[in-house]
Image 1 (tube, helix red, strand yellow):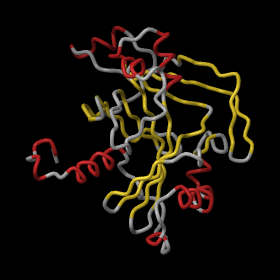
Image 2 (tube, rainbow, N blue to C red):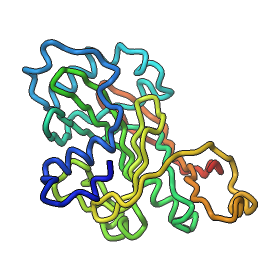
Image 3 (tube, one colour):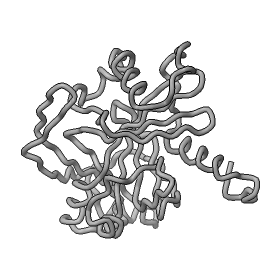
Image 4 (cartoon, helix red, strand yellow):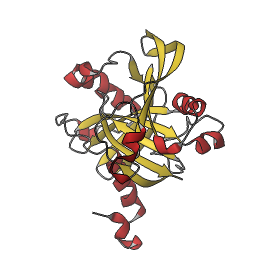
Length: 248
């Protein structure tokens, strides 16, 4: 359904927010079974943390992540939102390897790609519905250079759950294993385009650019990697480096 074609009065603001959040975190809450106690649990950092350690960490999905034990929600900082039948609790992610997808159409220098990769914000969002089904998603907030410069190279405030969200850039949602679920471009907090992922082509070549008489847009992969030291619920980083993988 194209919600843009509906009269504005037929789509209340609250419903618009639900549409946007469900669009970003589609396929959420399908894997984890119903918890009979979930309906009485308030959506907050404490209950999200309890679910993560008590249930999710025992699943094959948690164990299948290449970064298992090397990434963790920052439990001390959270944003909570409850809309309709869904609750969202978002945490900054403590993670030593960021895989950042930058569109070829941004036409950036390598230096600017490095700045964007380093500044990209990664969060963990725990989503629960009223039936008690719960899931977790990783969200990569990849800013445009203009947005990054406007915010003095610090986008730690950015969240889809913020009422005053003005983010411009690309939002990539992944599952815990790291598979991409959705990619959407945003400008001033509004979705402007949805990206469909095709097969990975490797190095971008002029021949590939001109195939079919058009210029497709490529998502090129850059990584920011740090050595990690895990102490309880704290992860510290050292010897960080930026890497251009050459994959698009």
